Length: 255
Ligand SMILES: [Zn+2]
Image 1: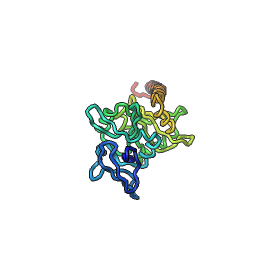
Image 2: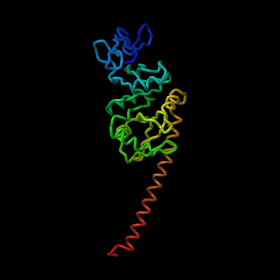
Image 3: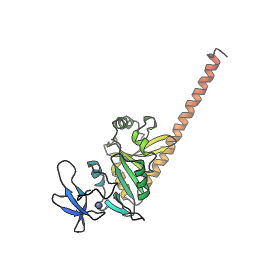
């Protein structure tokens, strides 16, 4: 973890420091070696939160975009079960940053525990997905939406059934050079990605209405895209029908 409590204050790790866990209160040792990111570890025992994953630069980079008070916040449910949220807004809006593989059961448990939860997942875990993300970059509409159904992205296939609000980070930039993420909308066997600049994501996540305005806009765009896909399919079917008729009339030897 990036924080432990020393004299009542959330403190970052420094060599030789000792502190208390922000969640369970047990002793924490600062680990400041050359290989791993500097972090706090529970003295002589495993992490008190089984959901905690070892942090990477990716996690830290994301968390640091939010106020310090919102990072690594212990939360308790009605049964007294505790977990440490990556980001918790004071009004109970949570963001989890997921880098490594995670089981379906755990995603479901976290959705239940946090209730008002938005996921940001690392989209670069599969090399194939990464290659595809470069391909679909050129297909994004001016409204920032792209149909990736036929690409079969692994990250979409895994996450679309698991939670309602998924943002995927392919660690790339939009055409204006700003860092972006994609909101995943999966409906009627269609996978759509809606582009959002990271700085806008952060602004919205910090503002009162949260991600709602963006999500509403994305769903409106989705309806338009799906309508145009339906229209395209209808035209294709009509063309096929015409062609079959034409073939019957002029080619079919058994007529
Ligand atoms: Zn602990």
